Image 1 (cartoon, rainbow, N blue to C red):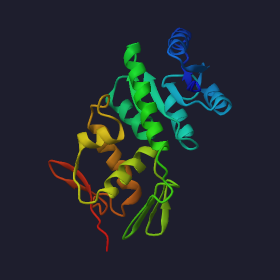
Image 2 (image 1 turned 30 degrees about the vertical axis):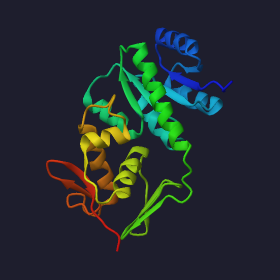
Image 3 (image 1 turned 60 degrees about the vertical axis):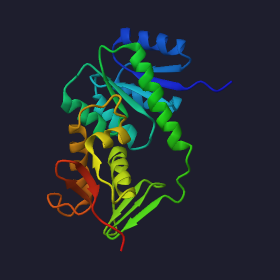
Image 4 (image 1 turned 30 degrees about the horizontal axis):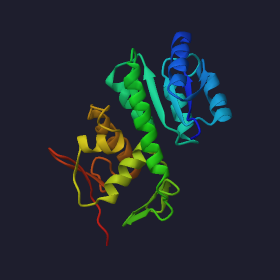
Length: 234
């Protein structure tokens, strides 16, 4: 019998915590909880969860900052649960590296589908060794093993989603990707339907890797279509 997957549920609403604990337990998961943002990191470090359900509007520190802190030390899948339905909040969460964003009130069946989809993608990534995954082009080296990027011999830090975008484009330098294709590859289009998320992610990535983000060398815009990697091997 396979070991139960552990989910950390972080929410300041007792009703939500009680419901999700019962629902996820019945679905075969082990559940640990945190009632406010100050508890999340401690519970995370103690329990080593396989996935985190993270509320945004919690006391002390908001969920966005919690997401940022976790992403500095871990690739654990994160699904944001939030009453905030604004596009900017979704873009912020997804740009910081969360894997999905679901607004309250939510359907429990849909939540379960999203949890399984995110865990499936995480398992697929871990099942393929990345030992020799290095892409080199003039002026840039991308190492998927160490998750590092060197631009002109200077290491540049990217968020997980920024790295995934750059890795995907650089791995297919002759291919033009539409925004919809990038959504599918990076976030899974079953759930992410706002192409503004891609536009924002491209902008943030360019600011970190391009000498002149307004005149990019690496991530090129193909007007009316999408984006491509603009440097070819020597």
